[in-house]
Length: 74
Image 1 (tube, rainbow, N blue to C red):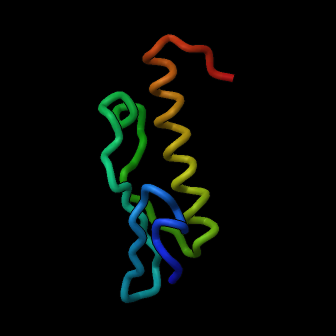
Image 2 (cartoon, rainbow, N blue to C red):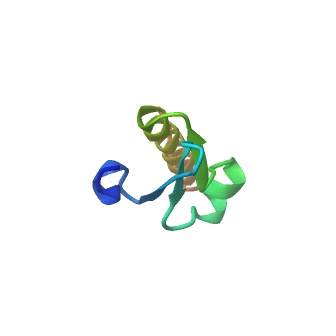
């Protein structure tokens, strides 16, 4: 596996003994993001899918923070 920091910044990657990839966010999401459904730990079959899933979680968190701040989301 390549350098974790350059692979998915802010997320720690784990390869299970069965070959499943997991990523756990180094810093917890804020309460607003957590309650909006952002997951700190996700899994996938391959690195591309794991990157997509971590980005989906970051998007959930970003949109939740924007809503909480009263900003318009496009």
